Length: 404
Image 1 (cartoon, rainbow, N blue to C red):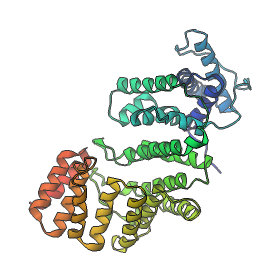
Image 2 (image 1 turned 90 degrees about the vertical axis):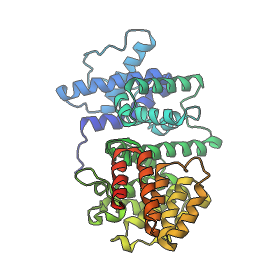
Image 3 (image 1 turned 90 degrees about the horizontal axis):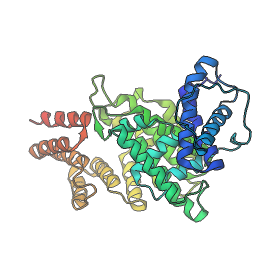
Image 4 (image 1 turned 30 degrees about the vertical axis):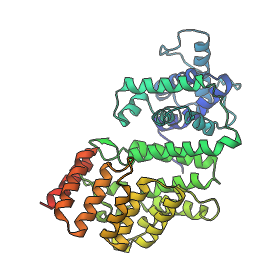
């Protein structure tokens, strides 16, 4: 028997459907988004007291449509009204007859927006997160995030963007941006870029939920499937990444028997079903690498040669300094730390990665393995100085302390 979702989860799932219906009918993305937020607030207040309506999406769409009409007529629509809306009275003219979530995702990832704006707008409009929640996730004041979201909506309006899927000649590139946004949301949740917590499970969960939604809409797209598989295979290790005191646990020290086997099995099944059937892309390759790690019962069982081959292929089809940095670790496992240090030196002139804390962390690890204790300690401390994540900082400092 399928469990009934909690009210807040249901509202979050239904929000993009309602927003899509309003934007498709009325346009005015910014006004529609405000109206949907008011409808969600009304539901949060009324449903616990009066009971959940038989058709929640119709209820929300009707309420949001009324708010929208009020706004367009210039009435005072921002006040929180306590009006009762009959559950069974539905304006069939605005009840969504199709799922516009994909169109909404494309709109939020409009190329005229900056990457931070795409992230914020996607989490707000499609993810259903509040402005305060998004601000906390990215460690900025709520007012700053509100301004960012407002500017994003104004940019979309100024660009004259219409609520429709992009034309065929633009769709592949726009889908690439959508996938990148979901990937960034997941990564920010899995290893937060700053703050006292290593991970934000609300963000990883939201990224997975949106990736599942996108996969349902585009089940035959190899990279959509690959991204969902990558998220599941990575998230399977989540609970073993930290100790009870919050200390970071490296991959080779984690208790693999406690990894989430259901997520691993689902991720592997998705990946197996798409490999060879769709054009190979970077998300599929990264998922394949994650699968090799997840299927190793013990660290020493890891097939590092296969991982290295996958990273080399990834570096060829989608060159990226972070992928190269990951390949360096695999080179060390297969050919030794000296060979890996030689590859690492190729990144010295790349401004995107040369001064990144992870570059110093990898260098420290390799120097330690090669016997250069003094160099390793200095690199660990420099990595700790450069990271803004307190758990990572503590971990790197502890590594350095071991070498004193």
